Length: 281
Image: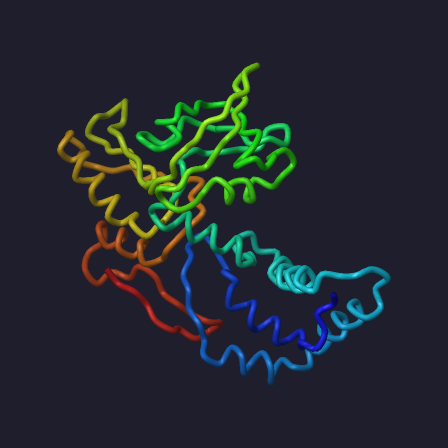
């Protein structure tokens, strides 16, 4: 069925609330005037989109999925900026992104990758996780999840099948070399760490700290890692942010405050030429 009778611009406004515009640092804000601006001052521009949307719905020779049309339009808006740090995330992707920054999730504690259209355990399971306790190993292939074949499915969909509420069980069919067997794994809360550290091999007074993202517990993790490495003899620090995709800005502010003098500026917010505010150490 075609989804007719719902103005395209109303779809835009409702769905944009589920979008995350993410850059090197992610933060969230909402301007109260967004809806009124979109529906009044920009009505002429949105009408062009609405006209094309309606024309495709009414005249395309096959049935169309209205949600896919809208998702495509929203993604096109951010893609047109040609900015590698700006993108549109739909509701599913936004939920997954938020989970990745939550500091923990409920699942089995195995990292998967697709190899030849099959999910494969990409690295050693999280220590003491259900996956480790169940004996899962690197390069194990998951053929089925609760009886559902995984071959050819998107990795995000497979992961959604495996994750679930703590205490519930998921049945996995595993292929290891030439052996195929079933294993029942009881899900649990899996901690997700964002800070890793060690003393530099060439100089034991330097603490090397890698921050893989800025999740909701990263500032506390960094503080604890610094304290731990100080006890081991570290007096200076090398902070590695390579490949860090971003995360919560408030965590970055807290971390920056650990290294800056009181009152030093951490970040300034501006919109075009107007300064909206700033955060200091």
